[in-house]
Image (cartoon, rainbow, N blue to C red; front, side, top):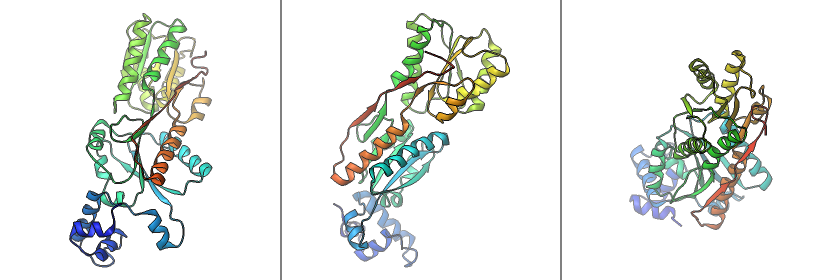
Length: 335
């Protein structure tokens, strides 16, 4: 375990100066910014993290671990709300002695959020939605605290995943079972390899089922994007008889366009989407939306459990948990 004395030796400063900086009191005690940065860089390079038991002894009470959730700002907020709901339920039901803080970051710029001060104020991390560039940075960086990646594959970190191949396979097979022949796909630009896996498997499975070539439309990941893609699809004719959307926000926007154009769902077009947003919106849309449900709440709870177990055991195991994927049939594509 790295101590303040180790950091002081590395920074060539006194332990008292290092302690003041690490407690966040450098400005108050008029320690120069250059010296503060020297301390933070030395602490980061050594992997220093405040020892929870030492904190408890100093404070006279049990010190909660601080878990930092890193969340990309280009991911829709209702997806974050589901993930936070899973974390909140786990914190309450398991009574983890943890505090949660959220650190937003811009896609491809995760390294800017992983500052020395943020790391020193964290006992563990849950990192969500890193791009391919962010993953390259992570795979070449080592931290002194446990970190778990949400829905990513890694050789260096523990991960909690879902089966991306099944997400693309299920809609194609369901459409084939319903004797649909003219598939369409509404998708957004891929930000990580799992998105490509989903769409490639969908394309492959429709081809195996001897459907017509998939008509693919690229759009933005929101309801306005779904509406726009649907209007472009309608204008291009002929209509498909089945549609896979890579998010429920896209599908909900498409439903409005089809309603305006008097296209009957599911009689004319069956619709299945990836269920990654607000479940009530899926259930109460007209018609209700059939989805490939992503178990985000359960995965969030698994991420928190993994970080907490690493903290109390002092073991950073590199393993992967994979959650099964289920189809939820509603009115837009009944069983």
